[in-house]
Image (cartoon, rainbow, N blue to C red; front, top):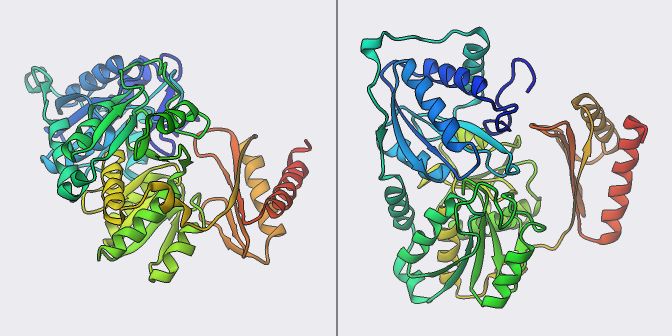
Length: 456
């Protein structure tokens, strides 16, 4: 972690007992507690990652030291904690998770009273408290005597998700759903949501395992090879795969094809509009231009934003005109429920869409425009990555450029995104084209521009 910067794109993360060591966690907990007012009610929870109990307990103690009242939700998905915070009058929350990162990582997300992670300015305020050691101390007489258990988070969350969809319609289809919660807390909620909707859940990788022995927690095509095979073999209507804190979900159709999140979101946005909901769609520049192709005929405006669910969520909340928001990684935000990524809610909405149209999931995905895709990452310094971005801007200056986060180039038969990673010393490149030949041509040009900068 660079001096002065603790928060990445989505919370504070590091290898447990190395970057994310007890000393850092104590100071970060004190900074978070000092950020909130004395007497604030803060709800904490964790996923199944290694070090979760250690970090949660340290954070809870540090919060109490600053005069904050701490409530413990135990094991819960991030969106379940977020729903509980906004719905039950908590002043904030702390989620112990590193989301999709490898097993050796853990992290801390700070939630505001609205249920959304604190915005970038608030992150900086917490960081200032951390680096300047400006921690509030209360006298021993003002300290809370204990952390109060708050066991209702899962129950309240499941009930809320189910309330937003047509339960009877979904139940009438007698669906079977394969759920892969990545050996983490999605196993506590998504099977329950399915059962409440009259859907039979078949769970794989459903034990809580800090080593993620079933598969790595990032739900990518490569990591879901065995899961997609099971979807075909078991014969279910749909497969869903979560990351470790279940705020994201990737769909697998009945043929075992894994579909990235922007494809799912394009279908859901179209469906919500056809249901009569109105508003703009907010998404990160990493999403495919398929979104515009699908939604433009419906007169739905697409607002492109920086990569990061925090920025999308706060922009939607400020503007108050969102149909939905999403990222290409499987994070979908449904404002009538809450302004945050929610894998359980997304699953319920997708099941309702399937039941409404009465067609297989594969048929819905096949209705989308066809693109060939390549995603690459290159190890390099942030300075080199920014230099590549400038090279790309110049080389593609005659095309439509979106420069909110790196540079996104949009042409008639391809698009590409080149941007520095927000969490690692990497350059991320995404390219989609309508033909393999065009994909190879654009990919080779981008590779040559990278070589000009790196000398490799």
